[in-house]
Image (cartoon, rainbow, N blue to C red; front, side):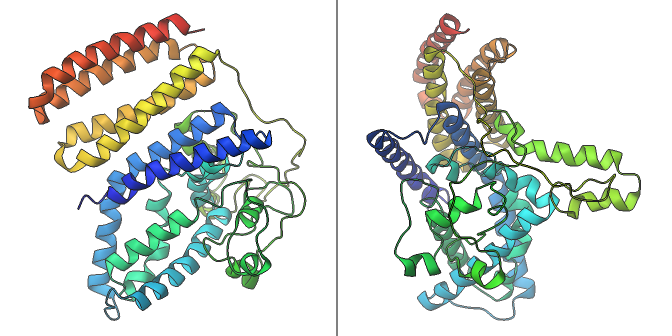
Length: 402
């Protein structure tokens, strides 16, 4: 079975759920979505899956080697071991999530998930491109305790899917017994808030009981202001993933001693190496969200690029194992570049009007070279189709650029 099949099957479910939430928003005459924010969230999610294709093998190798060399015993893939695994996974997730808010180098990866100033189902897909790689060590007790890899993968998959539905304003508070034990949309809205009483609260994944027991629980009361204390003011998916590490690098350069330079990695987010303290930030809860405006035809163009990006991602995931490393890397870079240039269009960057033509040409060349080498029976069909598509997109962009 294709190892990427579970995610491929989940993608249509995610998109349908987002469409339903959009319909419900319009029915209630609410404003939960903005085009530029939602497209950026989704492009970051596409990038997350691209990186996951390369990271997944490293994580599975780490799991297998840890289990082979350090497992205390071996547990069969049974339903009761699965229950134990998901409870342990959820407890470890709580700490991974909490430390990702308390330790600089982990926050640098996790911050991307919090940097949207909206709250809807697309935010659930706004995931770091590298967080799984740098936080995986926290979950190593699972192979040490001998849980079967299939049990771990199933537990991790269900855990991830559970957290999709809690990223919504469409669901209010649920019955009290559910709110007491489980993470819910209400609890997770708090987690995404920058209101002073909400910051660094409600880290649970499936269960909220860990927060209640360990002193990090907060009830949703006043309206939540979403985002981070210093919002990034950008629709660039790569910058959303990199910006905090840029800040860390600047702090490393200005830290006066080697010890303080090293401390940058493990200090609390926002820690300043010169004053050796974490300054208090005052958040203006009435500050307007970052926004930009582009012409409707360009919005449609960016939307079309997202649709093509989803199709490219699904095809890439399906045929990943059949491709040479050259085309794995070239396809990954072009999919990521598409998201970056869509961000540039949304920000009205002037350089993007030259870069977009170059990207379309690179996609055309790469696509036909890949088909010539790996899918030669379809090469002529792809060549004709891609020529038509390339000319159409170039003319569409040229006619509507600002």
